[in-house]
Image 1: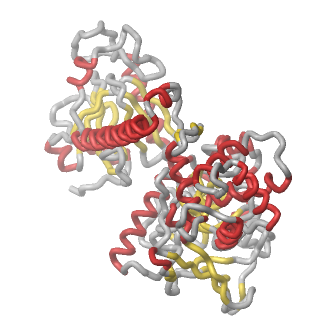
Image 2: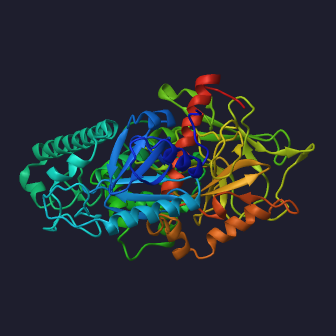
Length: 558
């Protein structure tokens, strides 16, 4: 007998045929579940709910089902639809452990929800601690049964009904160890500061997270933010002597594509000098400027301009190593020879060419991701990372011997790609039925600033559209620059609609129609999927990229 089942109907039919223990099967079918919390892959499980049981019994294969070789049993006490995956639903155990799964079709999803809810509604009640064969669990979900409620089932009673998931427990243990390590590091940092400045200087600050400078000045800045600012200061300080000058500001801003005027540089340097006690701009005076100037009511126009430029520069270098990357354009623009090359300056000022696709990290230490701008907003020349050339410079795309432009009009968003990702042309996406397009995953950045070609920008993921272009899956990840003034307000697709009404529709329609008369299509019922789905998609393409590198080497071309 085949080891896979194509549909819910087949499995239900087979399960009833082979119900050798004569128990009534209420529902049977295929559910997809993560074997562990941090897994990227969703595994197919063959699941059954028997009459008079509030649990899902699951098997790894049909052969296991026929032999009654049970992989596990998961009790349930509540069930709800879940939009993190198409046809998804989630259920809670009596111990308030949440499981998220999805089915192959919408009809299957509705059937599972209906049957599980009926099982819950028809189950008899029980008293706390009581144990009977078929009962209604006392705890339903965190929302319906808060942890402090007196009528909750005891944890000691709940766990007996649930087979332990060793893999999940191992992942949770690793997470706890990581949290302990972080807390130990923070404690050690605090103890060092306490020894340096004395307990009295810190006791008033224990109710909030902040930082103390070497001269004892207290700043309301998170330690992680302080680390980023230290990295930026070190980039300004090209001589490594602990001080910066007006020329240092001008040079770094120019190198990173955020040039400033001499007037703006003089204004910033003047303000930093006013914070210095030595007459030179060291890290302490640099941080006092950053901490105090935001609260000033009497800022000059030049200072406002510089502050805006500095915020965008911050977004460029969340990872200190990214701050040592610069771009260099060669060839006339536009032309077939035009290229934007990427260079990294390492220790001993060694400058070498790098690949924006392979050598720039996808993830930053704070969990944000990097975006490489190919096409600035309000332009139409189709620039792209040349995945088939050594070092993958950015060039203008060609078709039929001509340089390509978007005839549909200028893009209303910054467009580009995420490094260290790859849409595998051998992988079929479940929601589109199409293979990947053999490119890094695309990004639509909706912030207010226009980035230049080659900019490396720190962004946060908001959602994703599954465009189908020439029968290939062409993901469009919607992101926003973390320093944009909308960024604190927008964290998911719903927030985009709330603060930028019509934005997603405009992006959707532009990408659908830009090839008219050819019209592109979308998977997942034309929906813009949410942040969790988008982050999982990016992580999956990152894994595909790792496989590509393993197969073809660190400078792979496709």
